[in-house]
Length: 246
Image 1 (tube, rainbow, N blue to C red):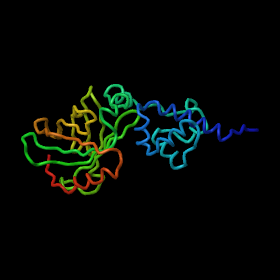
Image 2 (tube, rainbow, N blue to C red):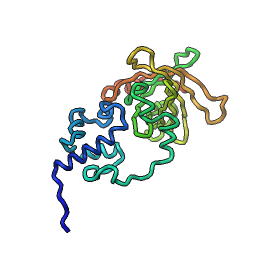
Image 3 (cartoon, helix red, strand yellow):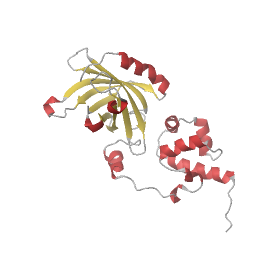
Image 4 (cartoon, helix red, strand yellow):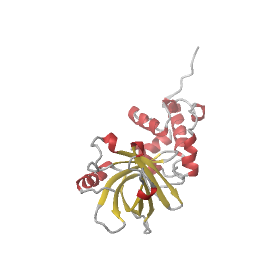
């Protein structure tokens, strides 16, 4: 059986068409490029069907969009995809965690330096670095508990994950360590000044025993951008500062 052989130009056009379709769910191509770690000019060449990505870049893109390398060969609509998890619509359509609702203007993806202080003016503070990442279904949050919070030093026990969502202009972030340890809810709003890089609000520290033991603190988030090298000094500063229990 003779199989038709497509030229590299045809394959590039196929990849470009599929990539344009995958990119439509993101309101900002520049932000998408930052999340992918791909130069905007090079990404535009992919979109136009003028270039192929390197194998490692293609793998990164496939993982990000949750597709496989068949996007080089077949139209996207002909590639079978697993059924969407029921939680996806709850996150994107009801809770407002998807990129079309929780926009870059409300909460940009990237790194944040978080500072919690007592409502009574106590100088005791907690510091942590938070990273947010956008997926088609939701906005993920990741952080680590400070090492001297009485938690074992291994990163598995200190890891914190959660989601960010919004109600209008108010952002709410729900995050927790494994087994719902140290659960927190941040309720924050971006500063009123244009392009403010600070969010302020309250942190609700949930108790696993009873509602009366739940505490509230002030929270401030300072945006550090999307590059890890810019966030490293803040991470070191958070580690040096003396922490206090919530």
